Length: 203
Image 1 (cartoon, rainbow, N blue to C red):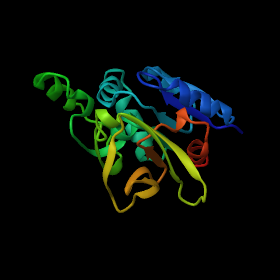
Image 2 (image 1 turned 135 degrees about the horizontal axis):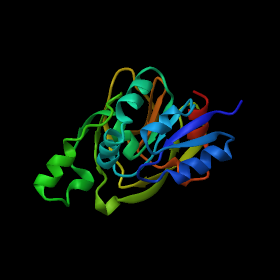
Image 3 (image 1 turned 90 degrees about the horizontal axis):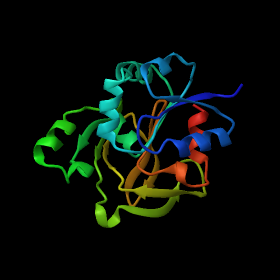
């Protein structure tokens, strides 16, 4: 029976994830409001976008507590870029809030993410000059490499003892797994390789 995956569709690049999941035979539902949580689904994708906006909308739309609870009790989740920031227990830096005046930035940084993944991340750590770049690196357990597309990406600066590194680039973890949570700093949905989506669907 095909998996049914919910994709957070309140902001950010969710359509590409939906296309990849359908390509792999999964059913897809979108989460846009609290009523959407009444749909049956057995996996969740948190896409790239703007993490503080997504966290704020999750609360305003009444989905934050329910999704946090489901993730903590074992709902498989794939989180990319901003999604990684949403899951991280600790977030450093202002990242894409740096252009705001200090008062506005402080208010938005006060919005906390889900905090279910034992990692520390630094927002937009690669800076404007390296805001977007492409690379390749091995996926754990495989000899061949997977493509890595970074777009103003966050950087994982610390991982907890229960967190496994799936992909490492330039000496730094860029894809990690903790239980049924997979979180990556790059955008696998933008490349033809489906390895990470397949791994997620296997959880």
